[in-house]
Image (cartoon, one colour):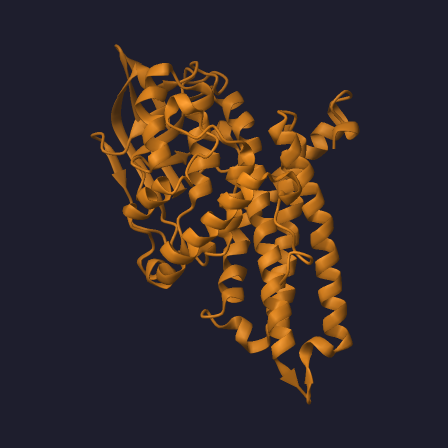
Length: 396
């Protein structure tokens, strides 16, 4: 489908350098990921060398400052990578989980020692990052987490369990959220960088998912894992505020991924309905098909405008929690309904795993759960609307 129908996300902000980078990112996906995605989906993970190749190509942490080995690019480069990776769906590595979800905690709040030690390796792909928040008894309710870090001399001892942790099979470093308040007092959360090869860190088996099959997801167990005080990220007991801040970027990244997949689904569906015939006519010539395509296309254009408005606010440092929640909520809901409608237009072919729309349909479902489940996002937005006079409706 031409860019007249589906402009690149953020294209109106692009410089010539952004266009060149986008071409390179898509060539990388075509050469290094798409030929292997079925193999990687069957394995439930991707080889670590893929991350090194992505680092060599400049696709990791594009906005990392030069002092830490990055290119010092703007957030649009991350947007471009997310869009390019969308064509691989869940058949390639979850680069956004490394770039927009885990690494920012270290960049924004880590000590100089941690930054110098880890950030250059995050840029090259030598070190893969994951973040461990969710637990069997604590998903969206972060204050209910049971994993605890207890001070022991100059160290902390971490004990607990995390679940549904993506990139955990490959990760060299994990940002772990822990309770650090005294038992019986109000919950306090702190963040620690935990090397995955530390004694007491155990990985569970790969979890079998209905989508994103090549993006390894598993449980992590921490049994009296000793980490030095220097592995504390930021200040003790300040982790909840850090999580709320970085989740804004994670939610915007999730919305960009949903928007990218929505655009791809429409492109595939338009091509399919132009080629497929029934009762002597192209499916695309039926009025019902045209109404469906027109409805989906127009909704996508409206949603993309909002996504791009949030990208602009992120680049200017003005994106807030309500907006990040809203854009992720709406983009993921639109993605879900679009995938369902597109599968219907594909008919039986859309239900076959070999069809890209089938894999995209399965991949899309988790986007209404990850980065903050959509009911929780509605709660965040609703509380903001009724409880914050200055930051209420005028900032939505």
